[in-house]
Every structure is written in C-alpha cells, then in structure tokens.
Image (tube, rainbow, N blue to C red):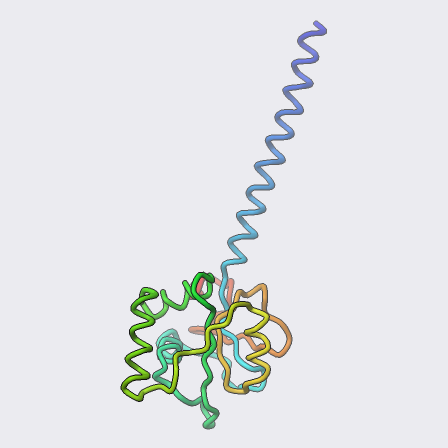
Length: 166
C-alpha cells in the first residue's frame, strides 16, 4: 500500500510538471506569434492613416517619392537577418540578392539616389522616424513607441484578422 501511495504522489508531480511545461510552451508560442506581427509606422506628424498593400509595395520599391501634401518619403528598413527584413522581402516578392540587385539598378539608372537606409535595431528606426517627418519603416508591433504612428494596411491594424503583414 505504501509503495502504491508513493507511486501515485510521484505520478501526480510528474503530471503537474508536464502540464506546467505544456502551458509554458503554449504561452511561449503565443508570445512568439504576437512578436512576429510587423507594423507599418510613420512619423507621428505624417497625415497618412491607411495604405493599401499595393501602395505599401510601391513605397518600399522606391516608386513613390512623396506623401500626399508633398512631404518626401524617406525609407528605413531593417538590416538583413531581421524578421522585419523578411517581411519586406515577402512584400516585394524578392530574395535578398534580388533586393540588392534591384536597388543597385535603381541607383544606376538614376531612379533613386541610394538604397533605403538599413538599420540594425528597432531603436535606431524609432530615432530615424522621429528625425525625418517623411520616414516610413516596418517594425515589430511590440516595439512601437511614442513618436511613431501605426498605419493601417488595407484598413486593418497589426494583429487583426486578414492583416497582410502577419
């Protein structure tokens, strides 16, 4: 009887421990899912509140040079290896090497002065967005701070159903 009681207690502790691990892993998965939502952000003084996916694609392809009202567009992108860069490449339907060749050609033809500025952190993007009124960037939604305005894409905000940058 005593052996069976110990086995039941150990079994209960193992079950509790496994339940805790399962709960923790689902919480981590849920956190990772929300951490992977990328927002389109602009300077908080920019009057734009919504962009279509097609407009966003034109912006980040350097085909749109000014915001409504004439404010020049200033593109900021994350450096290769960042998740925001992966989202950018998916938006443009390009690989990293195609993206580099595309911008080299844009500059060579005189269609752009330079490739978009690649920044190594979301903190650097925040500073750039504050400093340049026409700035636009893709940033992890959890990293959005004051001075940044989240722009709707196709009428949806990050995290909403059918948001195109999830």
